[in-house]
Length: 70
Picture 1: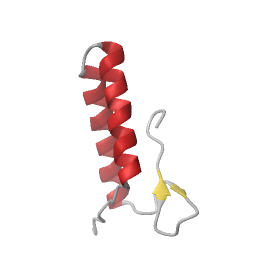
Picture 2: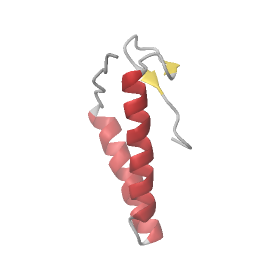
Picture 3: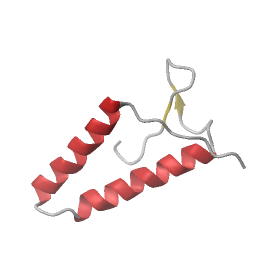
């Protein structure tokens, strides 16, 4: 099985940090953010093993995978 490398754009990384930070501040705890980050990382591993999983985008080498609300 070939495992592909997932490259995040700078904007996507910053968006993830903002989302996780939002929930830390909102909930006054990092528990939910930790679980959400783990769920997103699990999806990243899944798409790296199954490169045709997810929704095609306007960019040939870019696919989107919705995880929960993200």
